[in-house]
Amino acid sequence: MDVQNKSRANVETAQAFEYQVAGHPGVLVVEDNAMIIKPLNKREQEFYEGANGAPEFKSFMPVYYGMLQQSNDNVNSENAEFICLENLVHGFDKPCVLDIKIGSRLWDIDAAPEKQAAMVKKGQRTTSGKLGIAVTGMKLHGQPSEDREWCRDLTEVTILDALAYYFSAAEKSVSKEYRDYVIRQFILEITELLQVVERTELRMYSSSLLFVYDASKTRYEQVFSSTSNASSATNEDGNGDNDEDQSVAADCSLLDMKAIDFAHSHWTPDQGPDQNYISGIHGLLESLRSVLAK
Image 1 (spheres, rainbow, N blue to C red):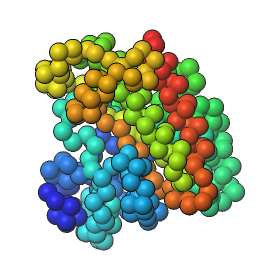
Image 2 (cartoon, rainbow, N blue to C red):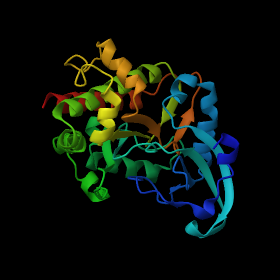
Image 3 (cartoon, helix red, strand yellow):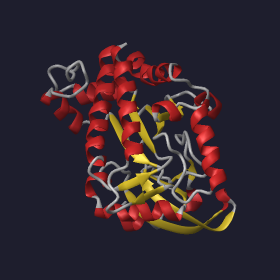
Image 4 (tube, one colour):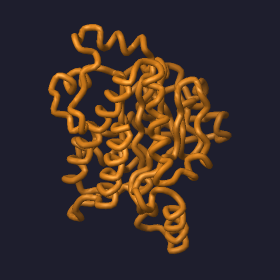
């Protein structure tokens, strides 16, 4: 389906999105499963449309297909408005999904003082305040999503256990080598994102990174069947000096990572990079390297 046809998708046949693990309810998936639609937020729409001026960062965002307005009984609205986005789990046999909120500051630039105070308290109660990251949702294939209370109760110590649990499906379904491979590839992608964010002028508050990998042994074997060393990996510190492994990762569809949730995001020319977001990315890299070392 081309972009024009996607924007005319029939909302009447859309279904609740099984792999929505965080955020406001109401995300739907259309019948071909290649696109999701979510209730329109004007600021998020503006951020997606403004990404055309920042092609490097845009490559780390889901594909944006435009806006859709249509009657839809599923959301109890006569004139529901949606933004249409790439479904990041499309094509995965056994997707495992993780949503991590980035940054210790959670309030927007125009937040009222009482909202700011509430967000400060929220950050102090969660790992956002000290680590600059917070697990806000997780779903392993074939299992129910972890609830919000479970996510909120994670501490600086137990968040590492939660991350290890997320990657455990790769080890159980395939091997320890595959688990380590997935973590290393995510470290590579996050590092590339960090380099882009360091030279991009924007502000993203309460934005997340969404991680997806396939826990299907069949797809793993298909992807690596033409590779002589299926368990090859990048160097042990996760910095990604192994060119062969990076080329395999670029060609395969076993995992993906994208920045999402831009309801409180802005393009900010002449204001420099987002240090709050950058600090959170560093915290995430440190946490993933700790999990990899276990």
